[in-house]
Image (cartoon, rainbow, N blue to C red):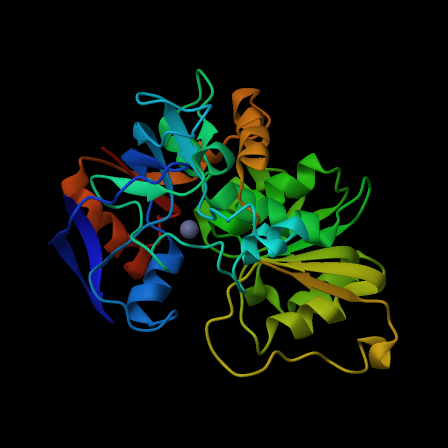
Length: 352
Ligand SMILES: [Zn+2]
């Protein structure tokens, strides 16, 4: 079979590979719609997970089941499915402890284009199909549904980690696709004043559409000062980090947070050895300012619940799709868009 792969650090291209084998609990799926992700860029061009050779890329897909193992109960060939980026081993002790994303080791629930071939192949393998696949609901746009693989669950997980409650004042740092979904998630969770930090005009407009009450631009001055000004010096109850870096972003988040507040971070910290935390604003360690950070959970139950939010029109991640391609042959073009990040890009999708 053909697949679009990482050939080595900084190199991508089409390769031929043997089709994967299907175990008794597993499924083989052919992609119907896929989306490249910033993580693919980190993987290839920054060598984020180390050197990988001839590994098929991609972890965001909606597809059609082609084959299932003998023990799979709820899926059959021809079913249209949403494929979560994170596909844990549900029998692992980590999953039993509530941390399925770390099944088999830290971050090891992330298998596609990490430990095994990803979804940019003519076929791909899904472990534990009954637990990891989700049925695509009737009437849900396939391209929008691809955002359920990673963008929606990651953005929403930031909101869960920050534990946003009714009436909270919330700041979402970063309004790329994950941050935009964090804005939408915080609005669904009942945020009152919902500030978002970003500057790209199309993202700013969409952040407002998803529920941001105000979008703050770092070019208008220190973000922390802007938040403190609007909250009478008190700061916000919750901060969701969906962008930034290890050096500055946690400093800002701690400084703009009330004592007793929570930070939910889903940002991937790709460089540096340490995360900086400002000692005094952290209450000298006694401020009850909690930092919760993590990889989003996978799994069918969560995925089907999130898909229900699309089916009922509660959230429409399809608005983030600025670039649509028809045909597998456009894979490289779509991926390079994520690398080059033209001004009008939020998220591309490739329909196959
Ligand atoms: Zn992704």
